[in-house]
Amino acid sequence: MSWTRDALAAIKRIILIEDRIAALGKEAAELMEVCKDLDRRLVRTEAEFELMERMAAPVCRSLPEETGR
Image (cartoon, rainbow, N blue to C red; front, side, top):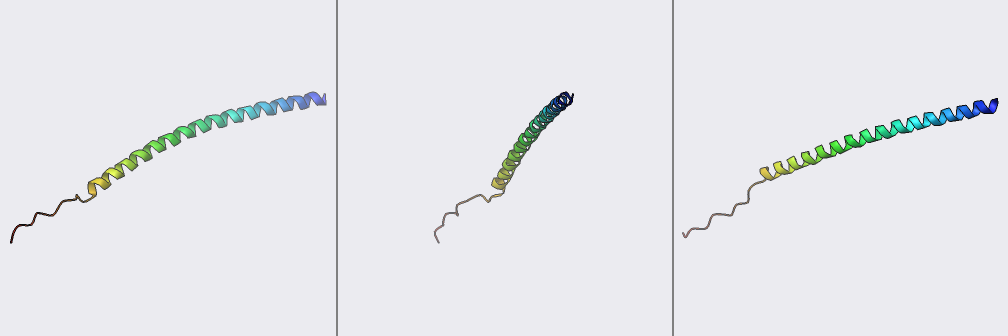
């Protein structure tokens, strides 16, 4: 009888491990989606900063032409 109890305990452990792996897989997928969303937000924010830098940069203007004195 001892071996049957051990076999059932081992099967139960395997099932619990499979459940944990499935839960971790689901959690990893959710974290991947969060990372993708954060990446999109970061790219958008970087683009906004680049645009602001371009708008704030002084416009290069040429000096007025010299008039004869």
